[in-house]
Image (tube, rainbow, N blue to C red; front, side, top):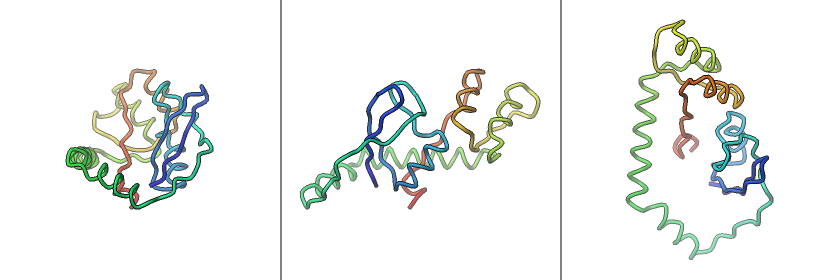
Length: 142
C-alpha cells in the first residue's frame, strides 16, 4: 500500500492509501478520489517525504492492521459489496444512462452497477438520483 498526501482544487489537504500509483490513477479517473471536506473530484498528489520502514514501525503497522474490530469491519464491508455485486446488473460505462432510465420510469427498476465520470455522477446526484461508489478493497487489487 502507498500513502499519498493529497490536496483538492480548494486547497484542502488530506491523505489516501492506494495499492499502487496506477491504482490512484484508476480511482481518480473513475471519480472515486474526492476531497472529504468539499467532495471535489479535482484532487492531486502533493510532494511527500518517503516513509522509511523500520522494525518498530512494522510492528506498529501490524498492530493497527490486525486489530479484530478492523478485520471484522473489512469482512462485513466485503460481504456487503459481494451482495451488491451478486444482486445487480453490471451495465458498464452505460451507468449514467441506465440510472436515468430507471429513475424516470423508462425501464424496469433494478439494481445496477457500472462506471461513470465524476461529472456524470455529480449530475445524477443533482437530479435526485441516488448513487454511491462501491469501495475498492485490498483483495480487489491484490
